Structures are given as structure tokens and as C-alpha cells.
Amino acid sequence: MTTNSYDFDVLYLGSGHGTFDGAIPLAAQGIKVAVVESGLIGGTCPNRGCNAKITLESPVALAQQVDEMQELVGNSLKLDWAATVAHKTEVIAELPNFIATLMENNGITIIRGRGHFIDTHTIIVNGQKISAAKFVIATGLHPHQLDLPGRQIINDSSAFMNLKQLPKRIAIIGAGYIGMEFATIATAFGSEVTVLMRSDTALRSFHQPFVKKIIDKLRADGVTFIKNAKINSFSDDQGDKIIHYNDVEKVKVDWILDATGRIPNTTGLGLEKIGVDYDDSGIIVNEFLQTTVPHIYASGDVIKKKQPKLTPTAIFESLYLMKTFTGNTKEAIVYPAIPSTVFTIPRIAKVGISPKDAANNSELTIVSNDILDNWYRHVEKESFGENKLIFDQQKRLVGATEISNHAEDVINTLLPAIEFKLTPTQIAKVVHIFPTIGSASWELL
Image (cartoon, rainbow, N blue to C red; front, side, top):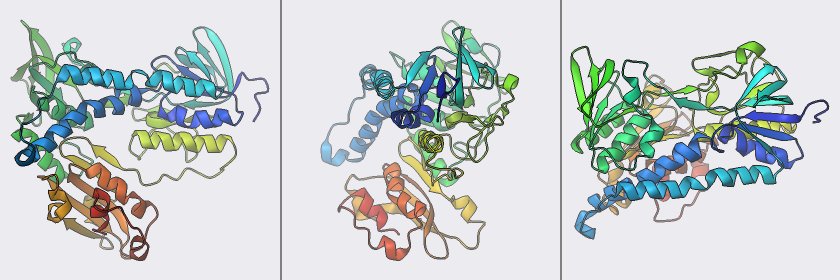
């Protein structure tokens, strides 16, 4: 690849996982690369998403384990919100500089500011025109905000993770990943939590019998769920934050989190001017991640796609584009099995074909396991444990979902069996360290 009359060979808009995982090895091979970023280097996941969330959630998981082992370990833990938030800040504080240094050490030019297209090969950043042979739009998502009267008093997920003091009464609007995970965290740290659901279903993409167990657990912990709540407006009355819903109902709290989803960052890029098609779900790409302008690609959560908009998906896409730009592949992208997890207590994790879809396919078999029957699950005195495994006619694993304290580790363990379509004979040749959660999981195949 050569720049010829262009400033750069490849220019990325955005610096998250949809960019840096592939851009760094791309630049290391001599490709002239630039990254445009107006915020923190690394995007959402390292700075205000996955890394921050799991740091806040880790003490909650530990407290759950101590509660379950109370007969063995004695006193319960006391969670400290201020200390945990300070620890979270410490954990993630150096990530932007770390990622930026990796990029710059491999020859990537970082351009600070917002870029927008003025033609298919040129963007403007801070009044400066910059050209490239190829572009990758990797601008990600931002929190959706309800457009209702009084919306100035509601907050997003970033604000929650930076609270110095946890409010006594918190309302969470939405019961997706963010709503359910933050309800778990907030109630564990002592807040009175109310979750207002748009419908009667939470975590719609997950196995609903398992979701019901999560809701039941949260209710037992003190969380109030209000189903089919149509939000009308918000108001502030002498310090009380009030949510008005279903025309005549209201909830009074100290703090409100809008967890109604995330939407693609497509506004202000000038996409309409250059003919890049997109809709409310994101930028439209083909099987090579090309937009409707062939030398402009997209990567990460900003893409409209069937695959889950998760960090591993963005990493896979970024690395695929690196291989494409270096000529190491001319093939269309083929996504692997991509797992997903809700970090509630207990967790729900899944990968592959779901029990719901398998139930409608006579060629598939669903095997249900009460995993608390396994002796290893009694080591930590787990109180939740169930999974469903989906097998094809050759007895190969094609799907799995689990609810347990270690569901994410179990699904990670089972991933190779699904992705590489391992037969029972091949599975029998895999020997795990014993005793571990991996060996206990593999025994079910």
C-alpha cells in the first residue's frame, strides 16, 4: 500500500477496540496510519465501560461468595463504595496513556479532535484537511437519553460509575445489560433500587427462565421492579427526583439512571454528504466491512449487525481489517461463536444456538443440567446453578447458556467445542486441570 497523494494509508475515526487492536499491528507492518479521537484514547470499554464496571462489580461478587460460605468464614464483608470507586479510577486511569503509547510506538499518528468528511478521501479536524486512501469509521455508541420533559435531572452510566457517594434511593430506567448490572451493584452497596421496565421482559436476548431467577434474586435483595412502565416526565421537588409514569403513577428517588440503551455515533460525521448509508442501528456494511463507499470501512459497535455489539466482536473486526489492508486475506469476514455475559449475581452467560431456537429444531437436542449436582459447585457453597447445552445429531455442542457464579468461565471453557465443532472423540482427548471449574464443565459434554 502506498500513500501517493494522500496523507495516510489508513485513517481511523475513533480509538476504541474497533481501532487499536488492528491499527497497532497494521502500523507495525509499515502502513501509514492515523487515529482521530476527541475523547479518551481507548474509547468506551477501557474508560467507562467493561473495565470500569467489572472493577465496581468485583467486590459484590466477593461479598456474594462470602455470604454463601458464611458457615465457614464467619463475618460478612462490608462494602465501601467510595473506596471501590477510587480503586476503579486507579485501575483504569493509565489505560488511555498506555494505549496511546502503544500506538505511537508503532508509528501511528494520533490526531486530537472531531473529524467529519468533506469528500470521500478527506476529513476536516480542527479546521485542518487530512486525506487518506482508506478510512475506518469506529466511532462506537453513546448512551441513549429519554427525550422527555425534565430530562436534565437524569444521568447516564458514566455518571453512575463516577459517583463519589452512592445515593440512598436510585431509580434505573431500563432492564438490559446496564440496568440489571448496575441494579446488582447499587443494591449490594446499600442503595434502595427501583427498576422501571418498558415491557414485562428483562434481558430479552437471554434465556428467560434464567432471567427470571436473576429478577427473583434481586427482588429478594430488595430491588423493586415496575413492569410496563411508560415514562411521561421527570421533575424535581425539594430534592426528590420524581419519575412520572403511566400518566398517574410516580416514583420518588434521590438519583435517576437512564439505562434505555446505546445508539451509534453517526451524527456529525458528514456521512450523508459522501454517500455512506446508515440508519438508527448503525452504519451499513457488506461482508468485507465496506460501507457503500468501498474504500471507507466500519468497525466495532457503530456497525449495523446481527452479531452482539461487544468488545470481542470489535476486536475481531479490527483484526480482520488489518489482515485485509495488508493483503493477508481477501475473504469475507466469518464471525466465530461470540459469547456474551450479564455480570449480575449470579451471572448469565451464553454462546451459540439458544434453547428457544433449539426448541423449534427437531435436529437439535437440549440437555438441562442442575450443575449444583456436581460436587465441585459445593466447594464454594454456590446457591445457583443451571445450564442448558444444545447438541446436534452428531452429538457436537452447538450452544450453551448457564446461570451461576462462574457462568462466564464455564462458557469460555466450552467455546472451543462449539467453534471447532469438536466430536465426542475429540473432546475425550482434552484433559483439564483438576479440580477446576473447567474440568467440572467439560464433564457435561
